[in-house]
Length: 277
Image 1 (tube, helix red, strand yellow):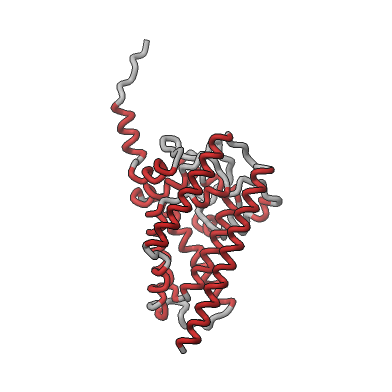
Image 2 (tube, rainbow, N blue to C red):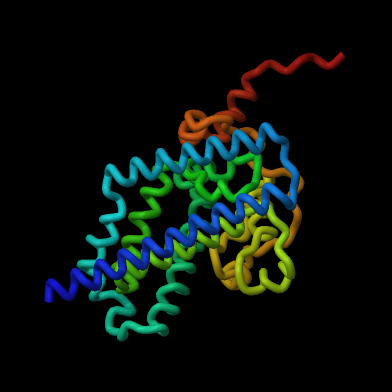
């Protein structure tokens, strides 16, 4: 029995590695396409700062997550997954599709919560601080944001009752879509495609500077959730990023979580206003 489990685990691991390789290949291709023919032109300075800072964030976050063995939470959660909603279903396409749909909905709800609750937004706003919208923005996250999300996903494994390796596979597929909808490209027939999945134009609105605009289009893969819960907005944002907060390097990026817009407005309010002539 143990040998069979190990063989299956090794197979799942190899499949996940192949999927991750595909996602990285997609990242490189999208990076090339948006460089050659970008949908929107950003200044060379903003683009370079974005790429460098986002790459450093990716390397730092993965180093921390590896050191704390965060991914092992999925395997711990798997020990309790036999009581979950789908645990009694036989493995097969139907179970995989249901697991994917439930996972996509779960991440949609997490994304909404990350905007609605201040203690989550303080970490998630790091992702929104990018002044240049490009495929590398998909790497721009605060490490605490990622750690909290891993705990949330581990709870999902238990509640839904699916193999942790399946969830990791789904997560890599979602990573591929994250690269896709952050890419600064024009997608052919996007109006039609966006009826089913989140596209660059929908997610570009999600990165608007205006809070009333970026509190929308929370979906990762399927666009049905935004339609169902009334959070879909189709618009072209005038500006990308956050108005009061920005980060030009990785240190500033990491520190953003400990600086709130409310505090900045308070500080600005303490500055004496010049007298009108």
